Each structure stands twice: as C-alpha cells, then as structure tokens.
Image (cartoon, rainbow, N blue to C red):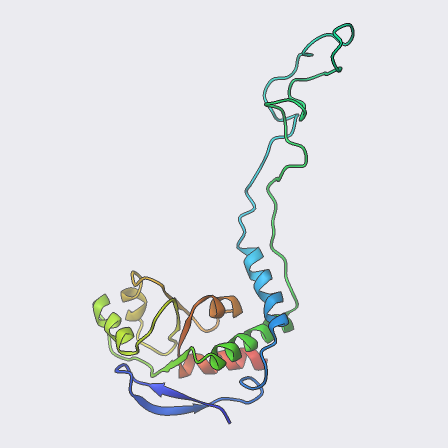
Length: 208
C-alpha cells in the first residue's frame, strides 16, 4: 500500500498516512486530465474581444461616387470591409467560452491529478498547524523549513485561521479549501502542500 510521510513545521517526519491503491496506483490517465484542463481554462477566458461590422462603423452613409461612368467598381459605402477604415468581416464578438463536462469526468480528473502529483513526488503532507501566526515571516519560515520551491498550492484545512491573513502577500503561494480545489489548481502549481484533514476531504470528493 502506498504511503505518504507527515511532516511537522520543522520539516521532520512524525507519522505516515496510508493511501488507497485505487487512487494512487497505476498509470496517470492523461486523456482524462486533458478534458478537464481544457474545460477549466476555457472557463477563464474573458471573451470580451469585439470588432465592428460595416453597420457599426461611423460614417459611410453617402455613396462614395456615382454608380456609372467613372470606370471604377461600384460601391455604396466607404465603410465596406473592402475599404480601408471599413468594417471587419467575420471578426470576433463577445462570447462565453465556458462549457461543462460530466461530473464523473471532473471527479476522475481530480483523482488523476493527485496520482500525478504523488508519482512525481510533489505532495507534501503537513501536520495541522494550530499555532497562531501574527507575521508573514513567521509562516514563511515554515515554508523555508519544508524546502518548498516554485508555485505552491496549499490546502490547509484544520489549521489556524490566521494563516489566511499572513500568507496573502507571499509570492507564488495559493491557499484554498479542499472543497474548492480542482484538477487544474493542483496541476498548475508545482507543489501541493496539504494537511491530513484536507487529504481526507479530497478523497471523500473522489469516492462520492
């Protein structure tokens, strides 16, 4: 059975947690992850780009020149897409890029993301921190003791609420609740810092 060491705030191993083989075993299903990641990223697109069609461009109400006798092609407006300063043909307009995939696929993607992080040894399980932190550098010292590098996603359910305040201006540190984290949040950060309480909540979401 796969296991994961539990560290204290000094980075010393104090215990181990047993991991279910049906979650942390076998190859990572990359196709499942791809479906979920594309959906989550599509939902983040603003979709605010807009171009003007010929009817929206100011001016152009007068016919540029007479219909016949000039030797030139006939035109009814100087705001035609054929003219400089005219409208745009088939240009982008505001739209909603978001869509949904089945709940079972989202749940499976969450499982695969945890498995991927476990296999790459980028999950750090931390004891619940009950100490009250009053300064950012106090909590930053904990992260230094754990030798964390790169972007960090922290799921610290069960820890003191003061961590939420003192961690706000730590660069590349994202604090979330276990019930809010998804596969994209886990994979876009290099290290997953998690407590035993959060681990249990994630596994409960997967097994529902």
